[in-house]
Image 1 (cartoon, rainbow over the protein chains, first blue to last red):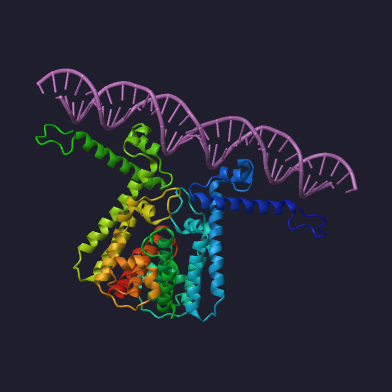
Image 2: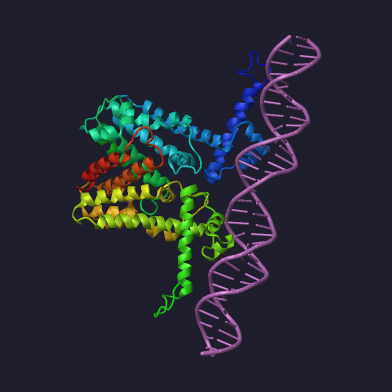
Length: 228
Length: 228
DNA sequence: TGTACATCAGTGAACGCGCGTTCACTGATGTAC
DNA sequence: TGTACATCAGTGAACGCGCGTTCACTGATGTAC
């Protein structure tokens, strides 16, 4: 309810209400995600929760898939924000802490938003094809990890085979580290995601009662190995 | 069509037909899984594919969830069979090869049956609660990995905190290796599953063009570190 | 400043579809005497 | 060996439900002159 604002409201009243409602729809969708999982997310249920006609959703998202895309991008940006913040909070040359902070930030994201985690790191949604716009948000986490790795200037042997197999990644690093060192980074990324996924998806049941302790131990050991 | 079998057919004709049809339903369900993903698996579609009334499925599986359970158990047993076979094919004291064989067997399973892989190692199916019967098949892979680890008698420090955090696993090993060594095994399991999941779920796109080369390299390095 | 028109948000009914599950039923196959 | 009965597989209709999406519409908000 903007009354007597002297300055013209930023891009108009309607645009602001629209942005708010768009956010609200995404919030309702997120809530549904948490209750039911990704595949059973329904436009009608969202509309119901918001007290509007189901057809009204189409003023904000042209289809169910577009809504999915928005949720996926938000999830990637959430974990991306956390990871970059954790990284930035460390002394730039303290690679060990930077690595550890990033790893813990990813796990914390998973614990805080398990369904968002499953949405982006679990099985792909059947029938849904991620558009190009998801790529940039998606790579923020690996980019952050690889940047730490490159900064740490790790040693490692050469390997023409590996070099070719990871051509895309090698280009990204500007060939400033060797393929074996880079592979170690990818392995670390794999170990982080693997441990978190095993935990989140129930594979530690009856075996590991305190995953946090194991994770922290593992990440300490991993950081020693990869960026020290 | 069993004609004039002298011996009485094993547990009767009907029982055999029944077993065959049960298998056929699971096969049709698997085919659907491959085409549509886990959540959109429908009893009616299976019945349609098999040319029978949708209600007939209920003679074989009392509900959709029971069918899911059967598929999940089959998937765990498939990867379990592969992993145990790969392990058994190695000289028992060649821990390096045993580890490598097991890791490659898991990845090969994922490549051969991506949707089965997603079914058991991806996001949980919303609304589905895995019953007790899935546990035994589910632990075959980690049990195999941990057995190799224990056989290799790895060194490693003590840690009361880790010991407690992994109490269940420690009990399984009969406390024959230290918690730090055991943690290294869990880390290895995490790295295997993480690298495969990143690959299968599309996170290597544009970065790693030949995941097989990276995986084999990583597993060689990992085996050196864990069981050598 | 006031008027005429264009844009937009939201409605409610409808289309066409698929789903899991139940139920009373018909025949065929097995079992007991 | 033959008969009477019980068991089982499979049918087809029905219940009650939810879904994504389209469409013509009503009012309210913005814009141009």
